[in-house]
Length: 202
Ligand code: GTP
Ligand code: MG
Image (cartoon, rainbow, N blue to C red):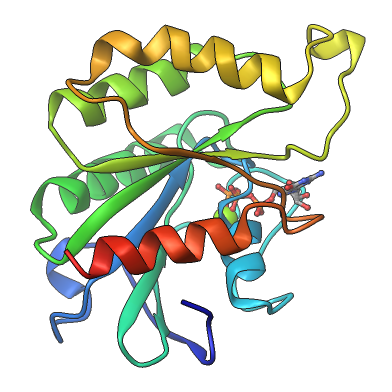
């Protein structure tokens, strides 16, 4: 399940413009700054394949990266807070939701949730939307390397993860699989790649 080869293929802002070779794909979605692009880089063991930033709102398109010439990782713009104009963010929201609903080669959405802080309302809303639309998903908890801070509610990542699971329970018929990760320590990398390999073989 390891990545031998990874290359950027294209950026799109409409589902129709995404690659048409029919290869299966997995999309990374989550709040701006949650660590989508960093996770992608961790998975492919490259520091700068996907561009990352301290400033939220870095990724602005549907970005396709082809892995081992046989499947795609897709980096998406974040939702919620971003240093970008409201109008642009509405655009992102519209084309990413269209992508989730209409991209036939999408095997599973990977919803990234920051485990270093308590659940945000917008994350719950997003999880609920995915559940309502029965979009297959996996929950990825990010930043599990970060220690608890008073200003973040003083909870450990494990506690935030449990709280989040509790809050979303009602949104799904079956509880989505979940994985704890860190792009700093690469925690969870092999688990995600194995999980993606299993999903591709269904
Ligand atoms: P947008 O493209 O703006 O939506 O953000 P993104 O979700 O792609 O986040 P990105 O990967 O650019 O990371 C945002 C910031 O979080 C950067 O400063 C990263 O270094 C940091 N970061 C990402 N993942 C981790 C992690 O696992 N642990 C820690 N400590 N920091 C992380
Ligand atoms: Mg990004």
